[in-house]
Image 1 (cartoon, rainbow, N blue to C red):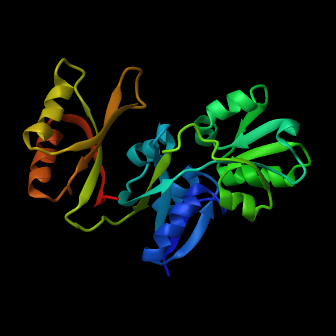
Image 2 (tube, rainbow, N blue to C red):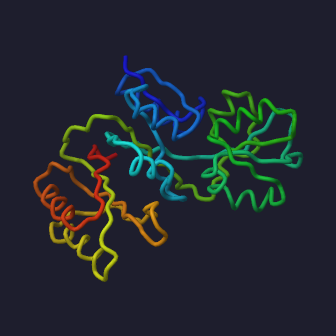
Image 3 (cartoon, one colour):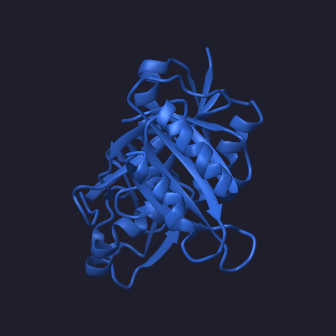
Length: 273
């Protein structure tokens, strides 16, 4: 049975996504303490695949995931999953909201609950953790009046009391997770391709690059820029487009784009959610 890594401990949203994935993929789930440790475990063959967060509806791209996939490893995205996100404020039994002296969670979760925290726990210290479930573990093991932001299952798993549920700033919140592996995904006819590229720092360079897709009637579902991690002012562009890299029209467009780029990397073609 293949091993599938996920960002742990048990009870994270990534664990939820991994549980959804193994219903169809079948495998043994292996937890890792950080995104970078998980991705490198896949790169080094310690696990066959890994489930990592890549984008949140409210906070945008998970930069650490993208940066490692673009710059540090050669892996392919083979599937995407979208999980609804509902955050809960939780603490050890007997602790009330007014008793809380510190709130712990993953940076994205803290950001997604900013309005609630500013309104009800404005002057309370906020501390970041590697995952939402890790925050729940720290709260469980502490004798202090701490609280964690995590999901329902984390409260149940770690024996914490939910003080307030649904504390995210927006009810439509969801996170996109991807499965990464050494192999590529097979063509399905309903695919998405993710790529990263840079162009010359000259007027019209980006326009000419994007015009390739417009002329080919290829729909771009996402485009954003990230620092190239070389010099200040140098950026790469991240694009999601509809279609598989082996589709004739997509393949031709990517070939044209490649000729214009200083850096070009396809992160994967995979079934759309």
